[in-house]
Image 1 (cartoon, rainbow, N blue to C red):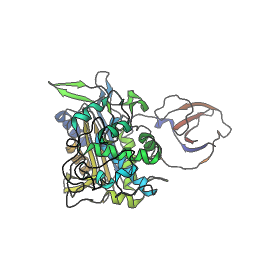
Image 2 (cartoon, one colour):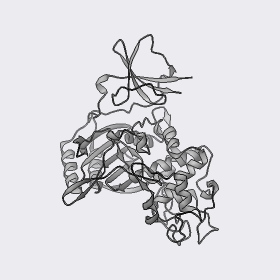
Image 3 (cartoon, one colour):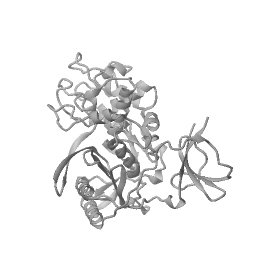
Image 4 (cartoon, helix red, strand yellow):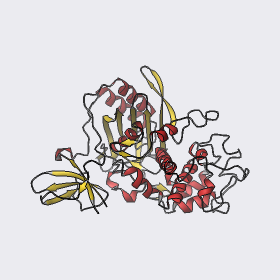
Length: 435
């Protein structure tokens, strides 16, 4: 059985660059100055407020050599912002009764998993999600997990090699702290990778596929994927380093421990994600989490060890003209990548900055938050997402003459993908066919 979601669409909306509903020349000038200081070739940024996009702008180049500008739909590697999606998946499984946060991770793994010095103390999912598991990043091992553009080692093999006591990259001293699990805070990428693998094991579904089905598609995040193979590489910003006064292009890359940082997305897709969290887990008629799960993730979990740490999310202090405020979010950094995303549930504001350089965008975040606090928007962009008007697939007697994807490119029919149908009478529909 096939069904579709139909939403009226004007062809004039088929633009790669969203119209900024509330532009600011002073914000533009500030960001462009920071880009020079931080050596960012390109930046894409967005502000959401009260469930709508109230500001969105992009600057510079996604690809300097080919003179490709950054658009609002440009896709960037997210680096550690990716961890928020790994945590979202875990909370969904908790809501489905498939796990508890204080369960031992070993309960869901196909090989023995324990702390080499404290084997009787279980490493729990909550500890993994709060960086208190005593799992340590072994840079020497992790360096072997990189490949171009996607990893050649599976997540399953990577996790077994790192955490199984007879694994190829196992080290009792380099992969674990000597501290008892749950007693010390130490930020760990490999812990989040294990978090993603637990989701894969529980659901018997590849982690990337699980996220696509249960997070990206319900939130209409059409330019979001874990692997380059699932994206149009022409839409992905190239990562750059800055050396000797010049920008140096890096090849697109990935790593086998990918749930901790390999996700790629655009600010427009991430606007939907931010609005969903600020709405208590829902976007339109689609819900990915309960409000209680969102509140739990935004509650300090280990105040005696690290007071700013929630479940995957943490609190970051942003400065504004009225002082300073703690927001929930995450930043990210990889080679040629700098990302930030922060949300303020008290004011219903969220902001995100993506850059394809290695500097820091925290001052841009301060500026955007200050602008958002004082902004009484005269215009806004309402995300088009939700299961509205579902009916049997029908062209209503009109002849279907062309199918476009959301970027306006001619394509063929694809189930479970947002498409634009053009009819013989000049009308159009945006549809999502569920098969």
